[in-house]
Each structure stands twice: as structure tokens, then as C-alpha cells.
Length: 307
Image (cartoon, rainbow, N blue to C red; front, side, top):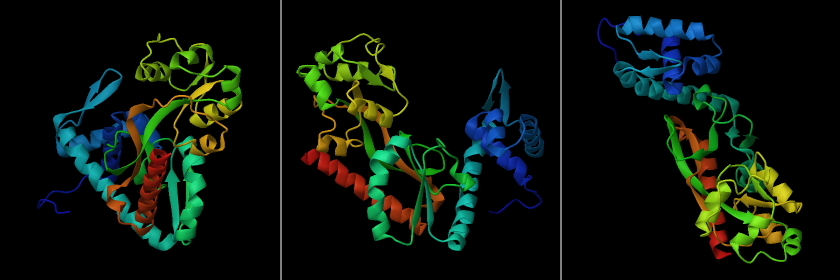
């Protein structure tokens, strides 16, 4: 990176603080990410503003916004930080060997990814995969994770995103509940059953896709659970009907532990994406795992169509 003659780069600490604050649009979140106090974040940003000779943030009531100068600077610094992280991570990979750290959500990990990992390990025995489901959307520039699978629309600054699988929902229940209900012949028949949910209006959207108008309170008497995995367990126990992603419960459907009474799928606008730093796409272990995941997803989608 070249600089103008006579221009001295600002302190890297101030640059790192500004990049985090600009990415979060929050001094508080930047402080939490960097392990600093909010006062220290404010000080570093003031230092940088003094160096560049222009304000970088508008201090608004209970929030901040980028000025024109800040908006010009932020994406350049995010890319630069990403490239530095990629370079150091590549050196770490050479030194540390074949550990691949993956972050994703619980149900995708337990119901879709982990049952397939043995095939990857057989094909690539020198790569050890570690899966973490407890960190949410992590900051990959910190170097703790190589790759993630996250839900969204495929746009995350500094990250390459590869579409993996759709987010579809359809009602599923146990054979015992289906028998107790005397069969579920029409979508409207579900209204007499306990409805399980993790999204306040998901059932309303599914009924709309099935051509049935229902009130927003349709699932108020049901049971709210935090994850698809939990809802699947409760549904298998015959305690209600859950909106589940058939890709995550293909084995339960095939074995008859769960049944799908109606073909209607509610497809969300987002999807699950493989993400990693743009600068690390050619790291061998990341490329291997990414390409393997994409092949596994294609096979799973083809199997669902054939079924």
C-alpha cells in the first residue's frame, strides 16, 4: 500500500477502532468486540478524526452515523483489515496444520452437517473439522473461525457468500398425532392441533401459501420453542405440529418418525450461505470444505426432488 510523500499513516489502533465502529454503527458494540471501554473507543476515533482533519461520525441521540468522509473511508479499511486477517490466517494455517473451524446454527449442524461429516473426513483425512454452534454471526477478521454457514440474503461486507440451501418450512407431525386427529385432509384441519413455532407469524405465512386465511394469532395457543431441533423433538413425541425444514428432517421423514401431511412449502426470501473472508477463498482446507458442502447440498436437493 503506497502513501503520499510526507503523509504519515494514523495509528493502527485508531484505524481498527474506527473500522469496528463503522461496521457496527455503534461505539458500544465496537467496544464489546475489541474488549475496550466505550470511552477508549471515543478517544481513538477522536484521534483519527484529528489526524484526517474531518469528522468521521455524526453523534446523534443514542446512535451514530457515518459522515460523508467516514462513509468513504469505512469500506476501504474493512477490505484492508480483511486482507491483513487473511494473510496472517494463511501463515497460521501453514504453522498449525489442518484444523478447520466452522461456525453455524444448531439445527443445521446437528441435523444436516454433522451426519455428513464422516464422508468429508474419509475423503480428506488430514483436515480436522471443529464445529461451533454458540457464537452467532462471528467476526471472521479475528481469526477464530475459517468458515461459517449462516442465514441471510448473501451480503456481508468483506465476506464471500456461496448459496447453499433454501429455507423452506412445511408442517410435520408424528404418525400418532395424525392418527389421533383422524387424518389431516385439508390445511384448515391443522387449526384443531397444537401448533409449534419459533417465529410469531410463520404459521400465518404458511397458511397463506396454502390458500387459507387465518388471523395473526393463529399459533397463540401453541408452544414457542427456540430452535428447529427442539420443535422436531416435540413433534416426534406427538405433542404438536411443527413448521420444519424438510432438508433438516429428511431422515425422520424417510424412517416414518415424522410425516408431512401437505406438500405446500413456505420458502423464505433468505437462504443458508457458506461464508468466509474474501481473501481466504483459495486457502486449501477452506476451498476443499466449501466445495464439498456445495456438492452435498446439490445431492440433498436432487434427492428431495426425486423423492
